[in-house]
Amino acid sequence: MELILNTFGTSLSRDNEAFQIIHKDGKQRIPAHGVKSIQISRGAQITSDAVLLAIENEIEILFMDKSGNPVGRIWSPKYGSVSTIRKGQLSFTFSHEAVDWIKGVIRSKIENQQALLLMMQTSDSVVERKVQKAISRLEDYRNKIKAIDGEIVSDVAATLRGWEGVASNIYFEALNWFIPPSYQFTMRSQHPALDVVNAMLNYGYGLLYARIEGVLIKTGIDPYIGVMHRDDYNRPVLVYDIIELYRVWVDYVVVALVAQNVITDEYYSVRSDGSYWLEGLGRRVLIQSFNDYFDEVITHKGITRSRGQQIFLYAQDLAQQFKKFT
Image (cartoon, rainbow, N blue to C red; front, side):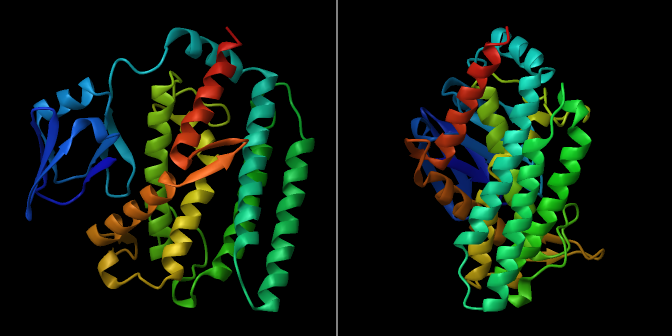
């Protein structure tokens, strides 16, 4: 269970071996052993005793901004193995194996995008032909990425970023055809979002970003040592690499919500500069849908686990790969 405090005035305190949430509708007591993480947005409060309870139970605490991105984190000192994995991680970053790894990440990202487009249903033959063409174009970029090579990542990074960007434009243009006309967007917009769908995507990616960063910390990997993203000062850039494997899960959640036509004016607000921001109701619905989807059990590479646990297993395998470079 994730505790999410995103309503102004909500507070979290300790009640023996449980957390007590106090909000405008009353109190709620939740045993600590059932909590995986705590997310706190602006306007909510947490006591030091609650923080200590979280640390004792190895529960991560995340402080989130209004876009759903983590701006601070408290975690247990028991997480992960530090020196061996991180020494190997540094060596891996400047190896040829890192080139193969990042190529595999981007090719998997595009393959996931193709799979999502294929599973979308349409009775419009024109749209179907356009989607098939988009999938073929994406396959061209997968093949280009497979063929390129270099000694280290910096030799191919600029080219890979360019191809990845073009592929993403192709994908989002095609994904847009499955969105109700009133919510279709002309382009991906990040900061700020220029429509409600992009606002939901941005917030969902923020939730995913926080989850991946936490998993890396727990498995002993340094999220600040990136492979392709290595130039951002004081940012956990490895998360930017790994998140590409799982973005499509957020895309599915958002498109599924929008397709149900449940979005109302209460979900978001539009600022004077034309930017869109999710409000409390929109965040709550998206967070719940996100968590439900990530709790679903799937089979990947012969292993049956929840989507959230699949990310953890991937990070564990990556940590073992890093250790081979020590």
